[in-house]
Image: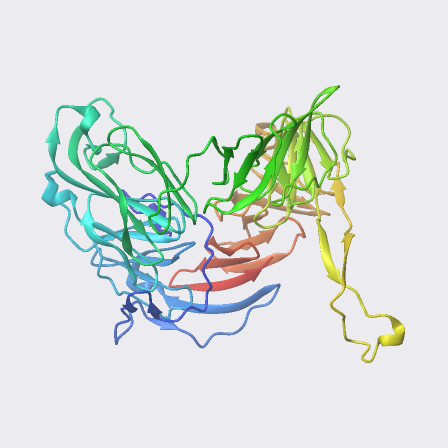
Length: 511
């Protein structure tokens, strides 16, 4: 009964960073929870076993024609065709009040207005943005709402059509909205604005009337192009920031000085300076780490830097492509620790790190995969000295960095899908039939990986039911349901929606 089966609904979701046990009072008022909650929720349920920490909610889905989950919350469709949104624990429920609901990052693009066959400005300007608690982040007055990140969204209002595509702010073909012109598209005049999702207010000065909507955003920074082609950098308070020499991937930037270059954070805070005759500084995407191309007599060397500009790694001969769990470096197709020790022999074509859930990485060479479980260096409290110890269970404030155990599974096999470690694998090799999972002597038929975690799979269990399997441990997490889907609460917690014939249960899973 998954909502993605419903016609015309494209469901997308990404990482949620909000706390689960949020108050029903949102940014702009209380959530809209109806007196007679809809759909019916049963909260007196038995706690689960097998590592699932607790059950949050049971929903009576017999009254629904669809139910789904995203990183923002739960969404459902009633039998009259209207949609509702609720929090993971069911404490806030909009009721079936929306004519459309589409997930947008950890938010929901919604409208309460009926659709129209005519793509007139009046019929198109009907979408807004809310969260699962019902807080109105963007009013339902726009033809398109594009979430940039957890902090900012671009909202586009159209005013009329035009034949001059270079002056258009939005394009549409049928019911499909596009930000670029394609054959057969209708070009619309209008304006775009940027909303600060932390306050639900427009960012003053961040607007335009042409299709130059914001191209980059972090929690502190907006980068956009004005109608006259000027590139603007603005912080969240609307203050223009200084000119920059090079915009880095994590939102920071460099600025030339008379004798040195300086790296600033996305919000304009000075991080460190460096001599450009010695260093060329770059950021590593999706991290707070930098690397510097250091000139030497033997050519360029690449060294990792922290936010203070201090060197924290061995100088590599190849450009670092990614940092894994802030402890390992993939460079030149090879995997190293920060001290420059190569962890695996040979070079690989590609790496698939799992930094979100800290489950390791998979490396590919041709169609052969190697699974690596990586653990990072951590500061761990150490017991006080014996002469100072008063309580054997007490720990002092002193910490020391230690290297935890690292497991590298070099079990490899030719596969069109993926190889997992130590005696079990998943394959889609046509000569072996459907996807299979093997752990010790067990074997399952993999139904799909659409649960959105590469180490979880829906597998065929007893007749008429399916299981949710942890491919790392072989542990059967849940059984007896038809379908499972997963949302990311944060980098250590997942929310699992388990659907049966007439009800759906919501679980919280620690990883």
